[in-house]
Amino acid sequence: MTAIKDGEVGLTERGILSRPDGATISYSRLEGKNPGVVFLHGYRSDMSGGKALALEDLCRARGQAFLRFDAFGHGGSSGDLLDGTIGRWAADAVAVIEALAPGPQILVGSSLGGWIATLAALELRARVVGLVGIAAALDFTEDLVWADLDVEQRRTLLETGEIALGDDNNGAEPHWRFRRSLIDDGRNHLLLRDFINLYCPVRLIHGQRDSDVPWRTSLHFAEMLASDAVEVCLVKDGDHRLSRPEDLERLSRTVEDLIV
Image (tube, rainbow, N blue to C red):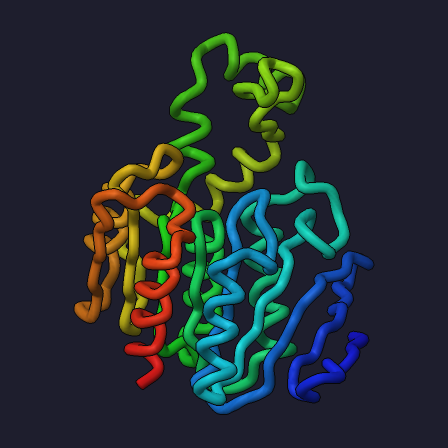
């Protein structure tokens, strides 16, 4: 693990965490008191997004510890996004939290990060004192990717190992590209098919104009959780990103309520 201290404040550590297979995870850590807050970004995003920075500002103002990092294949971390799998991202998240975020933690996950945060919470159970999902995309590989493929697309994925969906720039680039390994591995980590054995407070925020992850996914998530301390906030005019100023304020309030 290498790190550099932020020269202005002397409390923000930016560094690289090495994994046993040689992969590297880029992170930014703010020193402070516990419970700390850990942010897990979404698919094809990174740790520099508005939600992560808003939570870092909140934690800095309160003196709380805060950790954000780029998942394998994203941002400053190594690897090809297409080689990423749910199991890989979950194992990396647990390793990063264990190495860099001691003591009780509140995990905050956006989209894919919501699924990964939940898997990490199940692994680190005793240390997780709160979980926040923002358009949490639990089981999306099965319910939102595989389920939406037609027969020909499924055959292509199974035979070639890869599928391209949609397009950007009037057909110049595929909008989404997935490998079979993501779908196959995702089936080993599905959560919404059974009881989710978490008892910590959970807050789920979801926009009802989310065109990527249906808002009813969060209702299903809440229903499957063992915890009774679960609240779901549906934002009627909210999209998938929930990154408008009012969305960031809502997120900050939600996390601060869990802190106190």
